[in-house]
Amino acid sequence: MQKVHSVKYNFIMNFILTASGIIFPLITFPYITRVIGMERYGAVSYVTNVINFALLFAQLGIPTYGVRACAKVRDDKQKLSQTAQEILFINMVMSLIVTVVFTGLIFAIPSFFNHKEMFFISLATFFLQALGTNWLFQALEQYDYITVRSLVFKIISIILMFILVHQSDDYIIYCAITVFAGFGSNVFNFFRARKYVSFHKTAPYNLRQHFKPIFILFAQSLAISIYTYLDSVMLGLMKGDLEVGYYTSATKIKVILVSLVTSLGNVLLPRMSYYVHNGMKKDFYKTMAKAFNFTLFMSVPLALFFSITASNCLLFLAGGESLPAATAMTVITLSVIPIGITNVLGIQVLTPLNEEKKVLTSVIVGAVIDFVLNLILIPFFGSTGASVATLVAEIGVLAMQMIFAIHILKRVKSKIHVAKYGICGIVAAIPLFFINGMPLPHVVLNLLLSLVVYAGIYFGILFVTKDKILTESLGSFKRKLKSKKQSDTDQKEI
Image (cartoon, rainbow, N blue to C red; front, side, top):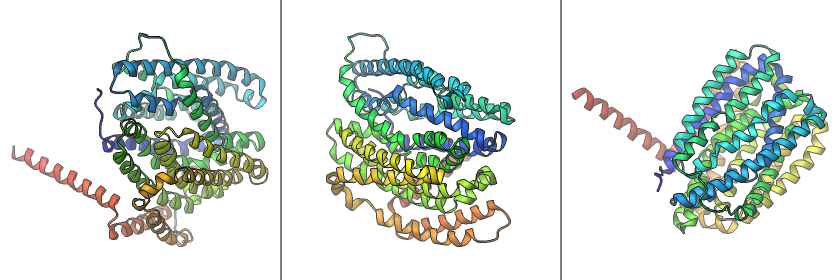
């Protein structure tokens, strides 16, 4: 049986990983947009989003299914090895098929051929993701390894970017560095996986058992991608690279915030699947309620703060050239709240309960809403129209999942504090409208003042009302600080 860390430990590791995912774009985004320009930044984003869309076909539903399937048998190395081999085989075959098909599409589609150098570089993504078997390490809850490995490659990528990217023509190099940062570390995964599983075939593969859940989760991922990657693809086809650049700038903060808000939920899938498989209902519902409250605790203030300060954030991060994206950012940042909730309800609750079909139905509804609204709004409103479509689609997904999971929500509704976090977030946001109108000498001062005021009011209200998440976090911090002081005192006495 593999050593399994606590949820708290896994969350801390995943939070560090998420924080690095925040710091990396904050370092690279201002530099890249100024060096290569908004239009070429939009071109790289266009290629990246197309590749990510194609990547769904190479992965099928394996990133989610692999975690759940391996988590259920992680206490039996023989079954775990057999399961891992079968899933890896399916993943590699699909990666080969997608690589061949996509190579043909590069020559067949003019907008792809115009960016052929970047597309050919990005083809490596298909095999690197398969080789990485990230789902295996997540199932085994090896978040410390995942975090350290990813941090090393992010740091190397930042160094390479500053060394190699100095002018607008270096945008192709930036594209290659992006692939390296995201998937280069996967090479090490394949070799490390041998520590936990054997890749020697000992029995005939039973691939058929995996197809149904994999394709259901694939359909779910494909539907979700319509309002994540397809927005940029449709913008590129309908409005050009510059509008893609604006939209990518608008969604940059939103992507970072989603990663932060879902950092806890991402470590819960293997644990929740384990609870369901072993009939541990009490632990399942207790963890579910905590996940909901944590998501609300994080998503509400983050979404409201960055939505209201959108113009100043863009001005600080990417300069005045990005200001046309301010309205789009104001709208799409609000989608962090429904995305955070559906991450818990759909991925961490319904999926472990083998209710993938319900999740699939909800995201199909969202995908249809998004696609139709994109067709209507993008020609007239560009990136802002795409942002509105995404926000409405995410709300639609949340509404559907709440209907499907109403019987589950009834069990924990008294423990979920939607109203409290919503009211605190809105009250704290009111002063920001006045601060935005103040004639401060620099945008940084405006953002700092806004942050201090907002955080002070939000956490102040929660502190006065003795919010459990806040008080437990403060208590844990005090205990660690006291322990460190005691340790320092003991060392001095020695």
